[in-house]
Length: 217
Ligand code: MD3
Ligand code: FE
Image (cartoon, rainbow, N blue to C red; front, side):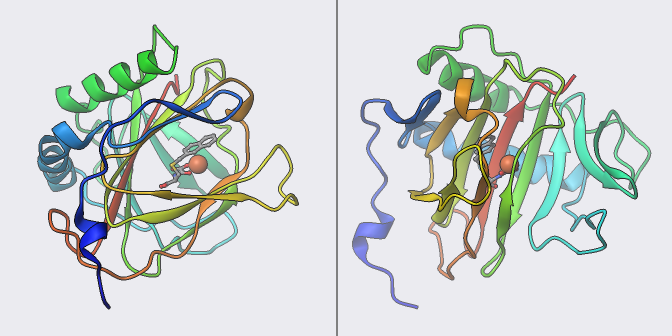
């Protein structure tokens, strides 16, 4: 696997980019706090280990997940739901680290959402080959609130469709430190992630971590 010097150059934080109605891309926005975020991810997953959820259809997801905050997203026989406790331990999810909440609130404000107070953060861990097929996020209680996503580690190709699964999705490369705010008409758009290409990230190694902040309750 060859890597160009270009891939390792941190993305400079430029102007917010509107990529769809209600969707704002903040390239490199989390770069200044990326090390602190990665450190906090380690602490959270030490308390609530990453696990591969089984879909209600019986498939094991290639992405490994866990949660922090008051509510966590999990699968069960009948579908998906937000739960106050980790089904693996029966304990509440780890608290949302202060640096998580701070970057999510700042990013939302940058995109025009002034009172964003997420109560859930889903941590997704992609190893090479892991992917997420096109889906909508519709288990959250407050659909007027945006979802804020923070990418760390290896770059991924993010697929962004319209309101219909059948439309051919647009593709965006999301790299270390990139933040996207998905609100308004984009909140219910179909989206997914193409299989992760192998690589070795200077800070995170052979993986991509994605944090999504949600108002679930
Ligand atoms: C667009 N995660 O956890 S983040 C997910 O990179 C999820 O791990 C992907 O989709 C990842 O549900 C994508 C970007 C994202 C998150 C939520 C969205 C885009 C979205 C909700 C609505 C529209
Ligand atoms: Fe999603």
